[in-house]
Figure 1 (cartoon, rainbow over the protein chains, first blue to last red):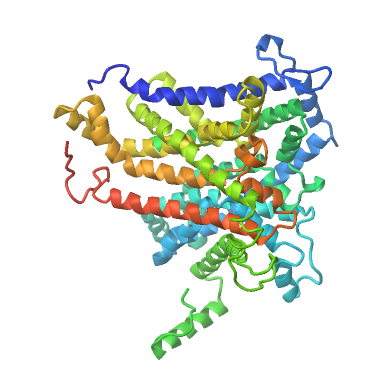
Figure 2: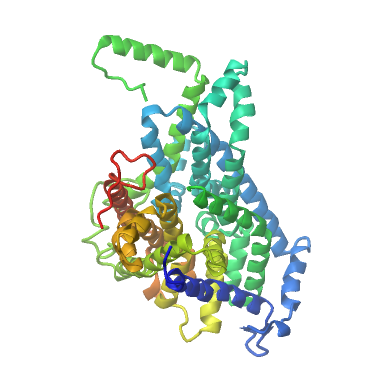
Length: 296
Length: 307
């Protein structure tokens, strides 16, 4: 086409500048703080912007702590991995049948179910957690219903450092992100493959295991990555549903160190978090790019 | 579900009772079991929120005992959203931030999406990578990077409203880039080429052909970005400086565990209604605008481009 050479690059200029200034440079600042020095009097972090002067002592201290058994960093790290793993498992265990149902059996209620699936995306996360802090109070509806049914003899203190509450809260918060890719994949499965399986003598379960599951494998991986990433950096769910040391997650340790001016430690922990998550992040990125370009 | 009792014809009622009995006898038959799971899921996700909204209308101070209907937590009480200066400030600041972020990020993102679909230079590809990377990075990491950036490197700006707007705009940039780009890819370049064959200039073709075709996608970007910014918590909080830069999400976070009043639920319900309206309006506009859409895979009417 006959556009002037400068024409399209001009449109990209603001975004290029924006991303460079407010994304790339800030991440460089994280490196400069984590690998920087400390003010000898105020003990505040002094970033070093020249990589030649980088000092890895503070960072390797934090890494060392990660490998010291019984340290706060290690305990929290292990706890975070466990919470995220169980919550992700719950998301998958609940999400798969729901997505399967909506894709195959919802019939004329499909649109209604889809709206219900999408609603949590525009209901504020904080509001969804607020709703649970109301329900889980000692005198809240959860205790009243469970007592009424005779399950509980006395009110359970759900919000006082219960790992189960935090894990269920995480699952509740992020499950919509799991269901959506699952639904999209299950809805796309060609029904003739199911009919073929049935014609060839496969039963319900064997069709599910040998036809449906393999065709939704990509979506299971994508959904797992999509919910794992934000869960790993989550701190507010724990703060709202427990707020106790015994259920603190890595996000809480990072947030606490930044809030209490231990900036260098916080920056180092962020780097560790990013290193751990780099592979799933790149995977997510690749599948997003593919999905966008796949519209073609 | 079909278990609703109270039908018109007795025959149908009998059939339904029969179905109900069968369902009780064997709730594990495939679709019924899935019906139960799906309905339980919908109840689990939406009921708590519905109850929270309901309690914003409670006449008393309790969040767990219903004491009658009242709108006092919205207006008419010293602690209502309207009369409590902190809550009102949080509401105003939330909408201010969201407006400014939309005003910055939608144009930048749209322009970039257009550039990206027509110019495949290395700079564009790298920038696109970072736009998406910013989107998949755990928000806490991005928030802390921005916090350190605004407190160390350009401490002349410092944290506060400006930092919040700039920080959010880079995070939200991905929405218009993804949405508008998907639309551009499905439209192809033929409309622009036709316009230019008929004598339109490059700018003219863009303004009079491409942009109108992009309107639904741009509207959708506005709506999604609006809903997403008024709910943003991590970046907004990390870059907030004092009470004047607190938003609704920050307010909920800091007071949900310290004996909150139903006015907090009222505040949350207001954001819920605003984002629902924005998404609903955008969905409606999207359908209206793309009804006779040349970008659709199978247009009902042959597309006509008026230049």
